[in-house]
Structures are given as C-alpha cells and as structure tokens.
Image 1 (cartoon, helix red, strand yellow):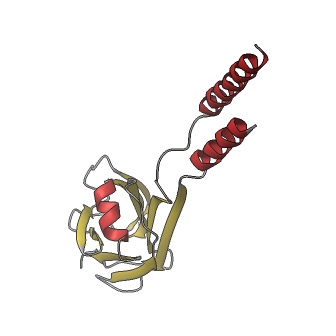
Image 2 (tube, rainbow, N blue to C red):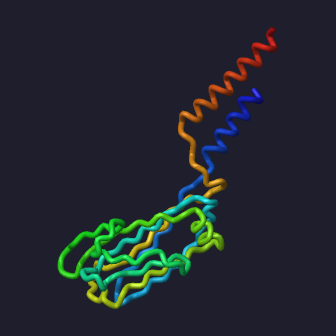
Length: 180
C-alpha cells in the first residue's frame, strides 16, 4: 500500500509542475508616432521558453511605417507589416488600413531575465510615418510563458500508465515473495 501511495504522489507532482501564463496589454492609437508603455506583474518563468505576439491595426502601408518592440528595454523586433517578413501576417482593409500579427520565440534565459524582478515592461514605439489613424487603430502585445515550479513538460497519459503498471508489478512481486 505504501508503494501505491508513493507512486500516486509522484504522478500528482509531475502533472502539476507547470502553469501557463498570458499577459496581454492593448491600447488605441490616438496620435502620430505614438509610444506605448505598459508594466505588468509576472511570476518567474523557471527556465521555460516563451513567446511574444504583437498585433495591431492602422496606417502601415509604406516601408517607412513600422513599430519597434521592446521587452524590459531589450529590442525584440522592428515590425513593418509590408516588408515581406515571414513572421508577420498582414491583412489589407482599405486605404491606410492594415492589420498585422507577428510572433517571436523567447529563450528560457531571456524569460528568466525579464521575469526575475516580478514585473515585465512592454514598450512599443510607432514610427512618425504611422500618421493616419482611425477609431479601429490599436496595438496589442501578448506574452505567453510557463510559470510554475520546475517548468517541466506535463507527462503524456502513457507515462502515467507505465508508472502505474510498474507500481502494480512491484506490489505483485512483493506479495508473491511474502507468500513463498
């Protein structure tokens, strides 16, 4: 019975080792060359990778119309929705009206660095060329990462089955030895 209890405790510990966190900030574009700064509380990432998704809508029809994205004052990317970057998905809605989405992978070391102080700073700087804006114009940033002790992957159901079969086999072997 002790062996079964230890196996059950191990399975519960493995299945609760990581939690997904998402931080999203969004604001409307209301002026030419606007800057956006957001601060958000963030738990430690414990060595897990993350991703940053930047999306928006506005006047991005020329190569001089872009936005620079920073996390904790570290430059991540210059996004120009019309430069053919494979990381950027762009949709044309009409004159001076484009929407875009871009996603960037973040290394475990970088995630550790930006979440170490319990807060993340997002900074987005629109170029002065982004000057035609309407009520639908906005910028959104989303940070996805794992927050939890260990930060390891959650095991597959087959892992649980193998652990259970091993515990049952050990129990059967022990019982058989006692009867002999």
